[in-house]
Amino acid sequence: MVRAALGFVIGAAIWMPVFFVIAIGFSLVSPDYAAHGRTWMSAGVFEFTAPQAAANVVFWVLSEVFAGWLTAVVARRREAVWVLAAIVLLYLCTLHIVLYWPQFPWWYNVSVVLTSAPAVLFGGRLAARFTRRGPAPAAG
Image (cartoon, rainbow, N blue to C red; front, side, top):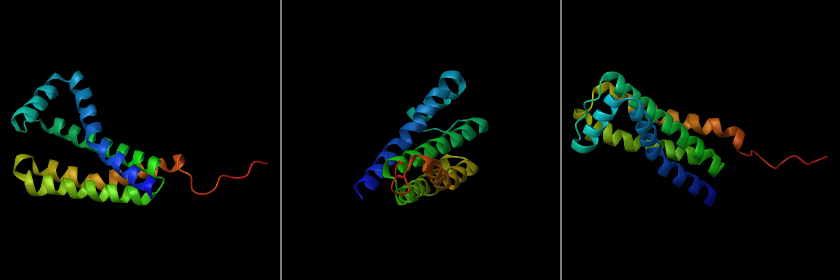
């Protein structure tokens, strides 16, 4: 049980920083994206073009897949991944559907929310090869 809780905490803690690492990496090759990112971070004004906003959705999905994967690897229990998926979905619903709906394009809000839980769960499924399902086979 402790391992499951630790896996959840690590997955939850790494999810958002991974998004920012990916976005900062992309901003190194796209000065225009970097300029819009600085505007968002400093003034809270969403000026990303549609392709840049779509890239942000992809970056969120990648960070959620990684968080789900890491949670499953550490926790070795799929329930920890399910809880992480539910918490991420609830958090993003609150932000994108309730609080920030008018600040972002409608399709961006819906995309970020609808892809979140499936991406976390997919990451958990990808981790299946790194987790043990039972006792190790006897050497013989």
